[in-house]
Image (tube, rainbow over all chains, first blue to last red; front, side):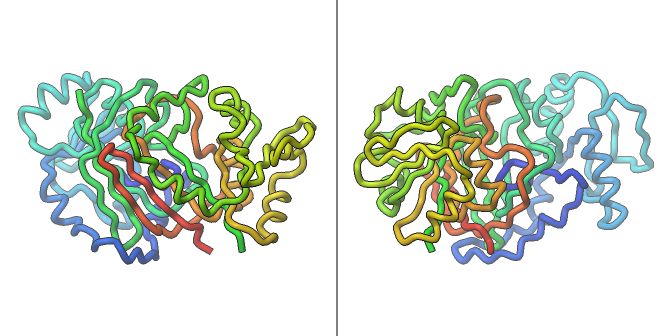
Length: 174
Length: 177
C-alpha cells in the first residue's frame, strides 16, 4: 500500500491529494508504469471500507481496479452491477487457501488496515509492499495498527523514485 | 543555522520499542563493525536532547558516559529540578523554547535520541529539520509508536536511502520549507 512516513494510508477526510508529491529526488529512478505493474495482478481482494472508498473515488477518477476478479470481504449485504466483483463473508483462511492460491498467481490486497491485520495475523500474506511518500500526515488511518504479534520480515527489494517515493518489498517467512 | 536531527530505528509497523521498553528486536540487524552510519552522524553533533525516561533507561542499561562523554552538551527534558552533572543539564522549561534558543546559537548540529514523547513534542512544534529513520525488517505488533496522533502535516524532501544486507533500510529526509 501507499503510506506516509508516519505509517498512514488514509487521511481522516479520505482525500488523496497527498499522493501527489512535487518532489525531485535526483538519485531516484522514474516511476514504474502503473499499467505494467497492474498487468501482473490477476485478482484483487479488499475490505469493505476500501471498497466503499474506491467507489467514492470512482465518481471522479473511474474504477481503479479494472475488470479483474475482485473479492470484497464483508459481512454486510452489499450489491454491485459489476460482474467481476464478488462479496465474500466466509472464512479468510478458506478463501486464501482454497480459492485464491490454486487459481491465481498474483493476488493484490488493495486494502485496508483491517484486512491487512487479519492476513498478517493468520499468516496468509506472502509479501508486503509498502510505498512510502515523503510526507508525515499527522493523523489518519494506520497501515499497521496493533497487529498484536511479531513477524520477522525478509527485505527482498527496495526502490527509490524521482518523486521521492520509496518502495520497500518484504517477504513474510513462515 | 544549526539543525535538529532525529536518528532513530523503528519496526516496519512504526514502533520504536515493544511493550516494557523492550528493544531486543533491534538485535536482528546487529552486525559486527556495522554501525549504520551512527558514528559519521554523531561526529557532526555537539548537543543531544533526550527525554527523562530515555536518559534513565540508558543510564541503567549502559552507563552515564554513553551520552555524556565530556564532548557535547546533554539536555535531559524533565519536570524534576536536578543539578547539572558533567555536561548534562536537566531542563525543566519549555522544550520549544530550548530548541529555538539552541538553534540560534553557533555550533554543530543537535540530535534528539527520543523518546517518543519528546520526538512528538518536537514534531508538533515543527522543530525537527532532518529525519534519519532506520527501518528494521520486522513487525513487532505492539509497543511505543514513533509517530503519535495529532501532529501537523509536514512535507518532506528525500535526501538519501541506504539498504543494508541485514535488511535494514535507512531513509534520510529533510523538512520541506
